[in-house]
View 1 (cartoon, rainbow, N blue to C red):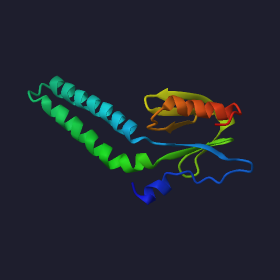
View 2 (cartoon, rainbow, N blue to C red):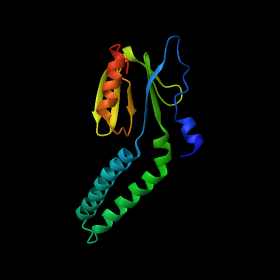
View 3 (cartoon, helix red, strand yellow):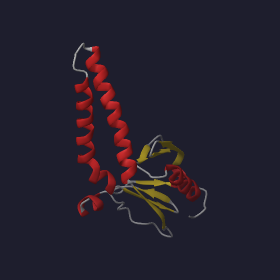
View 4 (cartoon, rainbow, N blue to C red):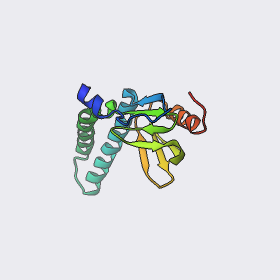
Length: 150
């Protein structure tokens, strides 16, 4: 992971008055690889089914193609995805660059595999991807939202 990726994928929003960072959420390498493995399995199955449906006698090549495609994607995106960091403050959730979500704006927190989805009252959706323990991430955000501090 390059320093450039780490800097680019970190929060850059200045802290407000009386605001402090309570916790940071970084992507977990094991969760990233696990998610990519499931994606590869799906791509392999889809490729084989597609070739079978077209009558191709070499359906095994669908598995090879699906695995190769997701393997290349996984390797290519790994440094960027693992560099992503979100900061939880007592007032906001801060994402890459100047992405900022006020705690009062959060309507729902959903767990989708290793991803935490933040849904705002206005309908905006934000993803904190590849969390080792998404339930703990949700609990920390809910605690900060309710005024408790971690």
